[in-house]
Amino acid sequence: MPNLNRSERKLLDEKMEPYVDGFDSMLADVIHDTFADDPQLRRLATIVTETDHAIDARDEQNGVDEEWSELDEASQKVTWVLERRTREVIAEKCETVALDATEWTDVHSKEKIEAAVREAVEWLRHNTNPAERAGVAYGDELPDPDALFEEVSA
Image 1 (cartoon, rainbow, N blue to C red):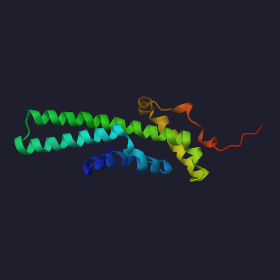
Image 2: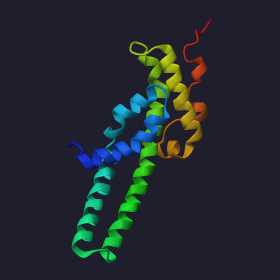
Image 3: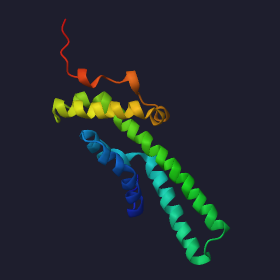
């Protein structure tokens, strides 16, 4: 997969940043490190930035006209899809943390894992629409963060 250009990287960073800043646990690190790996996000970022460049070029050459308006409308629609995909990717990252983080004890403490799972489960509890669109588990399908490392007695 080709590298993102500066404009595409900046756009994806702008979409990712509120989520990274909004989480206090290692969930923020997971999002930061893997967000731009999503092929749909990358393609959408390319479309938005290329359309915005076309808008700028049209404006310089022809000013605001009907075609400029059509390009602007297209950019807004693709940006809206990018926003929705962003939330789906966040849901996917939350599911990964909620379901897989207990396997990361060789790298992270149980306390850090519990905090991350708690944030992931909470986010998915309050963001069911992107979770459903992404096809990820949420609600009762996810582990109880308070019971992640409880010993099972026989």
